[in-house]
Image (cartoon, rainbow, N blue to C red):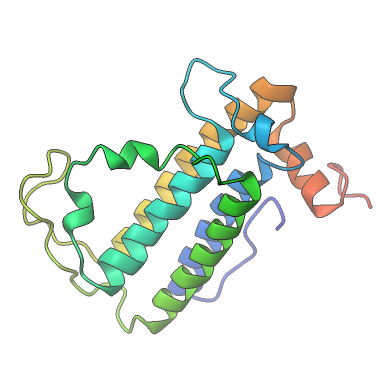
Length: 186
């Protein structure tokens, strides 16, 4: 995917294109890394690249499949399990979480394609969530904008972690992943 989103024809296409662009940035940060490097924590943070990809995938799936599509709100309630989304289990690899993220992206595109009104009200948020105003009602449009925001935030985290691992930066990683040069040459 190029460094900038191409011109888009409509809002739905724009939201999906910008979300895809941010997902790509997060994936590029893992380009050509071993599982060991992808789970390294080279900065002051406890975050690792593979964990960021896993968390972004599971969070996107929660927002889109559980909340937007199914109306399920229990995933917003405080839970210790939420922190576990940033950690790979013993049997998970970087490839596993990258494949998961690709699957989730396809799920999101399918769900968004089936939504007739991006401004429609979704299920109100549940009580007892300290970071959400009780009874708040979002739309699919808001959810997509929030996913773009959150994915961009994590892509920025990933850039810092990757640069801390081996000095690689987003543009050179994007070019390497796509088989091009940073100056646009082949």
